[in-house]
Image (cartoon, rainbow, N blue to C red; front, side):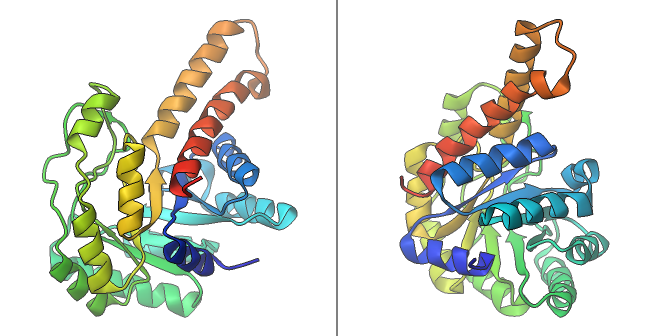
Length: 288
């Protein structure tokens, strides 16, 4: 099987993107795995600090690795949005395929210095690990929110190049008009607010020479995402839409079968609801 690095480079060369989907339960892992297997495309499971605290740091790695080995499926796991050196060390030691140090709220120099420190440990421990960092600010909440996050700051091509040169990262997550979460006013309001700039993406991709990652993929219009991928995005993150689908699916299941007490029965529709979202996103990301 190819490595995650090879799949990322292949996606970049083919002008498609790998889907990255955040989960916090084994239902989520299976929803993503089954959707990707059905379409025969590589996929990344993401677990942020809070998500991996819930599902288990080493346990999440073990489940994803087992699925990969038993099925021969290109499914990988990423330690998403990690805010400290100690948590990077924890994820690297646990065997994650990729890690992200999120210093987006830090001043440029402090972000670069901490990124470099974390990267040096990660590469020493596992030279094959994919190391991503963030530059620019797009908020932090993968929730339904009432307004665009305060303090959103876009990334310039010049800053991106300087940051990548100083740190030696493998991938960069820039702020290009995207933000985390879904606006509570509904999907149409979200689409109106999320103005991704393909030209900014293209400039950053050309200046850094790096594969780029689009965070805040929930609520994006399909055409908008495709234009971002064509401009240089190689991985797209989705979280909030999966959470919403899981909640809606679970509530409907509990309402439809109020006397059911077996979790594997009343939770299955929630898993299927998540899987449907993942399938639709993967078709967009892979231009299917």
